[in-house]
Length: 365
Image 1 (cartoon, one colour):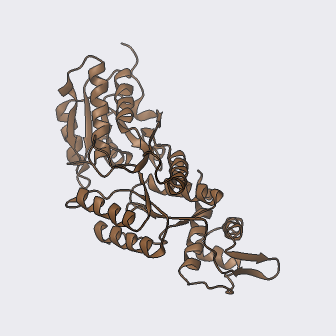
Image 2 (cartoon, one colour; image 1 turned 90 degrees about the vertical axis):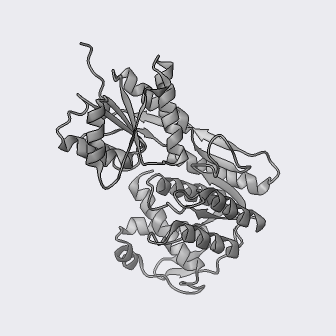
Image 3 (cartoon, one colour; image 1 turned 135 degrees about the vertical axis):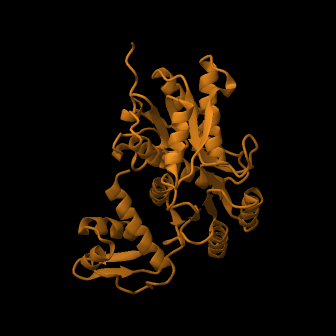
């Protein structure tokens, strides 16, 4: 999904939120396209796309020479909320949510997306606040990404889901489960197969001639990251290496040079990073130390959403199918609301290895 497409959806969602929360009332005139263009820093065609989408949903009426008037918002057949506390912090969630919004609009589902998230607000408080809003709005469904890196996160996430389901709200999980693998909640879940993703990246480095691999992640990483590490280890085992041959190295975000030094000390020749957000600063630190990438050390990551191709040495990454995740999640939500008794649906989608310069294979000697 390209940036201009994302932009008109963002503008549409913002204006729709202002209508839904009463900032614009039935009968009010919206600012002109030119004024909205200045407000959002967007072109008039982009503004027009956003307003046309609002018109299709009967939220506004557009008339040439008259302007755009707000109509009384009718209740859609299906309404769902996005409970994604990491929406503006983890790069995969913006395109996933954009895909959910677009797919839902086509299907007649109305998505309530918080217009602004207070990124300074503690994740627990933010999640509780959003859950309260969705319960008060009487939505039929909520797309939920369980909260990580808070005390008692498992109990908190279970409590959040119980609050929603007690209010009659159906829950579809995005990206990860509430429980550590292999335990599962009785709720639909859409994401990638992280073990398979880790295996693909580990096998890629082995096929490229690497023989000593390291997996770099934050201390006590998320379960999705632990599963990627498990997949990397499996790639080694299936290629004749011992189970303990994968070196694990902690990454401290504000000290990437320390991680780089550890990798050099351990004399690894292939590095799998937990995600691209980890790989980018580590790659820069390695280059600052004069490391030849990929000649002496090959580096790969996961996600491939924003900046993997923009680094000084373009990063090999495992691309998450964000658009497909959003589409399947929306279809799953619609089906869950229509058929609450249906068996739990857990969909793991395959991503794609995107090879770039950071892991160019070695020539045979």
